[in-house]
Image (tube, rainbow, N blue to C red; front, side, top):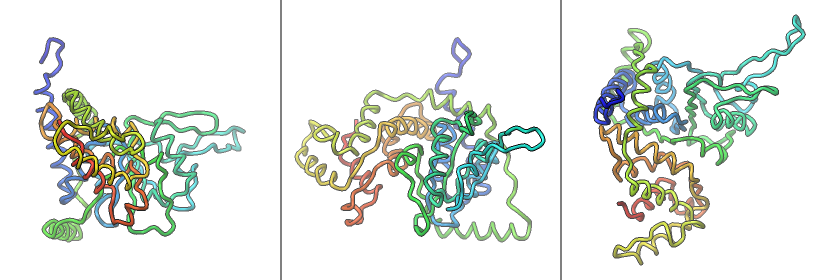
Length: 350
């Protein structure tokens, strides 16, 4: 402890590591594998950001979100997005009371701590715009009155990457509000065998076992306070800003990859070839998100300082939904992760 009674950075990191291990252990009682998804959910909880989960049906996306709500004991609401959904179905509306002769506010399901926006890309633009105010401003306007949303407030949205009929692609302005985009992969064969055995045991013994709320408000504050103690060297800050700037072809020409090292000519040639795949780059909001997430990743690793490897590990989930690829990238079979990986290889690390 220091003179003000606050924990020293090492003590805060050690305490946070114990809390994180407890949370991971509790989630693992219900979710087999998917360590990247679970760490991403915990990262968003600590950072107070929203998450977009993309994966085919049956990969435990909904179950993971429900489990997170259970171990935090936060108020949880699920909204199934459909083409006929209206903004009032999410935010709420004014109801006329015949007895009193007045309008009363009927709050929608968005007034909760954790919102599962299931298949968010199935809702039309009006519904998505109604959710945008809630995600960015943490408030909802009903009639002429604005109501604050509870704290914390996280939107955990899912979408199916293989089914596009009857869907509405999310606008870039809304995608930019998501802190992370997590790609949920198929489990390994051994993990899938455990899932089958777990499900068979559930059929004999009932539903999934209840989880213990190990992330109460005190423990969540321990994690947030520990993340704030993680040091970020100015060179690391410059590095992550260079990565974000490298996704913007009109702004980063001749700057993003400047380096006194040998091979600069080859690097410039690779850069010019890469830019033809990018239509629009990431906004400064991505640099802020990358800064926050690399500190939390260092916390996950039990370190009190950020390394270039933390930045590289956080770059994919932070940036993959924030860059718009050109038609040429699609024609060449290059996705956002491929472009980001090339950028990471070209930007010199400190």
